Image 1 (cartoon, rainbow, N blue to C red):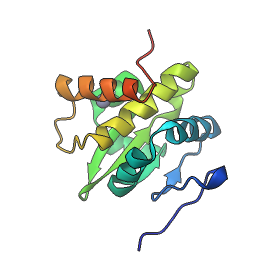
Image 2: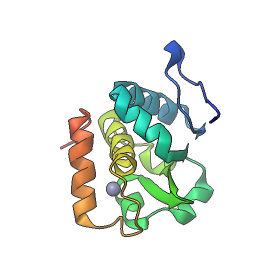
Image 3: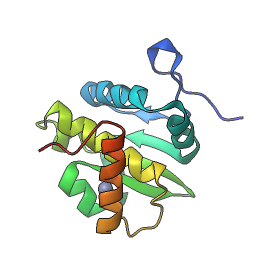
Image 4: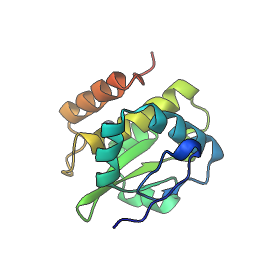
Length: 139
Ligand SMILES: [Zn+2]
């Protein structure tokens, strides 16, 4: 049985560690996570091993996605983790940060597990899924 990480109020659980030093990112992650349908959260819980803004993860992040948006979904040991670049996201709008979080969750949800995550097709699919979750790419 998997360990539960109960970090949010009102009993919304995640099955992976959320190691975000940035309080702002923690708040936005909680907002996005709570907005997702339960079945989508269940699927993400099964696939995610970690969400973190720890700088060491940047070494493993998909450079193009990370530089472009301030976040990256990364493949690791059959499951996925998400890196959020707190300094890159620091001066971005709330809408942009929510979009980045939803976009990276979408890569995991859509099982974009190969290392060719830079493919434009995957980027477009992740943007569409983020928009379907009501976190569209800001203008
Ligand atoms: Zn992407």
